[in-house]
Length: 596
Image (spheres, rainbow, N blue to C red):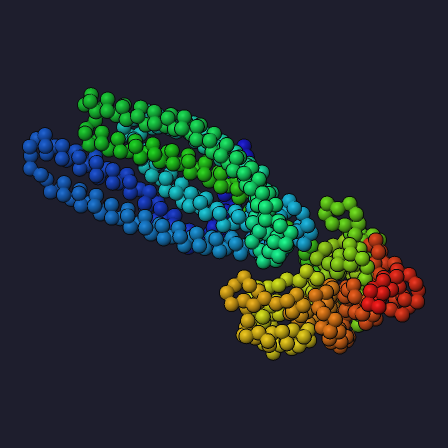
C-alpha cells in the first residue's frame, strides 16, 4: 500500500523534469518510441522473412531471389538505425540528467532558504532536509527508469500483438511466470526504503563524525584530548550496525529472488515448448518458429524488465517522499498580501508588548511577558548572562521568529503587517556566530548588500568603517583574495579579522536599524576601542541595538537594558545603574575587579 501511495510522487517528479528541460524530454520520448518498435521490425525481417525465404530456396532447390538480398539490406539498415537512435537517446538522457540535477538542486536550495528559521531548531526537519538533499540528486535512476519503461512497454505491446496473432496462451504463460517475481521485488523494495528511512539519523551521525575527524577546526582538540580512538570506535559501531542490517536484507532478497526467478524461466520454456510442438505438427513454418522463439524470448525478457522497472520506479518514488514533502513545506513567517512597506524614516520605533517565546521542543519560555522599546536614533545595549534571551530578542525584532504571545510593534503597527523583504533591507545585523564565507574578500563584504557586489568603492568604504580595510590591504590579492582554506589559493584569517569583515557587511547595508550581537567578541582591546569609536559615529541618527559582555563597550550606549529570566529587570544609563546598586552594578563590579 505504501508503494502504491508513493507512486503519487511520480507526477511531481515528471513536472520537475519537464520544468528542467521540456524540449529535451519531448525529444527523448519521441526517439524512444522509434527505438521501441525496431526490435519487432528486426525480428520480422531478420528471422521470419529471411529464414522462410532461405528455407524455401534450400528445400525446392530454386534460384536465390533478389528479394532475399533486399531483405538482408533492410535488416542491415534497421540495425544501423537502431544503433544510431540508441546513441541519440543516450545523449538526450545525459542532457536531461544534467538539466534535472542542476534544476532540482537549485530548487532545494531556494526552498530551504525560504523556510522558517524555526524549522532549523527541529532535528526531524534536519533528517528530512538531509534526505531531500540526497534525493534531489540521487533519483536520476528513477528518471532513466521512466524512460526505459516507456520503451519497454511499447516494445512489449508490439511483440505481444505478434504473439497473440499466433496464440493468446503463449502470452498468458509468460505473464504467469513473471508476476510472482514482480511481487517479490516490490516487497523487498519497500523493506529497503523502510531500512534507509530508519537509518537516516545514524547516517547523519556518521557524516558528522567523518567531518569531525577530518576538520581543521577540530584537529587541535582531537590530538590534545586523545579523541582519535573514541571517534573511530563510535564510527565503527554505527557503521557496523548499518552494515549488518544491509547484509541481512540483501541475503533475504537473494534467496527469495532466486526462487521466484525459477517461475519466470518455467513460463518462458512452457511457451517455447508449445511453439516447437505446433511447428512439428506442421502448423507453423521454420521462419515462424524462429520469429516466435525470438519474440517469446524478448517478450519474456521485456515483461520481466517492465515489472522490474515499475518496481524500481515505485522504490525510487518511496525515496522521493521526503523530497516531495520538503518541497511542499510552507514557511509560516511570510509577507501578507498587500503588506505594508517598511517606514522610512521610522517615527516611533519598535515596541515589544507582553511578548513570550520558547523554542520548539523546549518547555522553558526564553522570553516571558517581555516589554521593551527601542526609539529612533537611540543606541541601546542588551546585557545579561548567557541564555537569558538577548539573541532571541534580536531574532524576533528582525522577524526571523514570530512571538508565541504578545505583539512586536513598529510605529504602532504589528510587525507581521510589514513586507518581509522591505523589513530586511532596513536592518543590518551581525550575529556572534556570523558566517565566514569561503569567497573572495569583496564578495565576503558584498553579501551584506549583494546588489552592490560590483561597487568596489562602496565595499572599500564599508571596510574602512569596520577597520577591515587594513586586513584586506595586507592580503596579496587585496579585495580579490580568496578567504578560507577550502579552495586553492585561499588565505585564512584570525577570528578578529573575520569579525571585522563581518562588521563591514552590516555597515554596507546603510540600514535604519543596526544590530550587533557580540560585535567585538573576537577582537583585542585596541581593536575593540577603534571599532566602537567609529560605531558611535556611524550610528548617529540610526537605531542601534547591540549585545555585549564587555562593560567598556556597554557604557557607550544611550541606554542599558538588563535581561534576566526573559524579562527586563533594569533599564537606564551606565551611571544610573551603577548608582542603583542592582544587578548591573554587581556584574560591572565583578568584571572591573578582574582588571585591578
